[in-house]
Length: 49
Image (cartoon, rainbow, N blue to C red; front, side, top):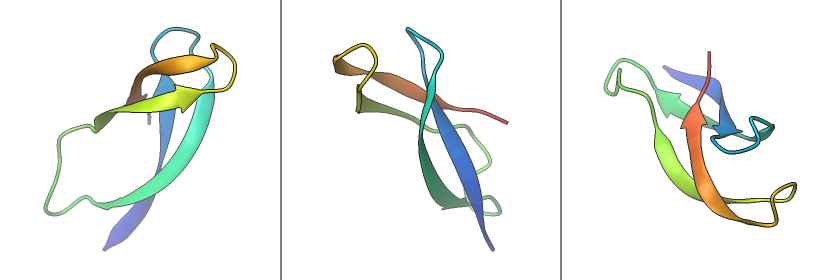
């Protein structure tokens, strides 16, 4: 079952993106490089609660 998760910028701590993932198959937290419109650069974004 897929659940909605929120991605947070590691630099400015703003929550910029939402996505979904299958929590039964992937229990670990997601970390991806995304564009942050507040920092105006590509930064790493981590999954929040």
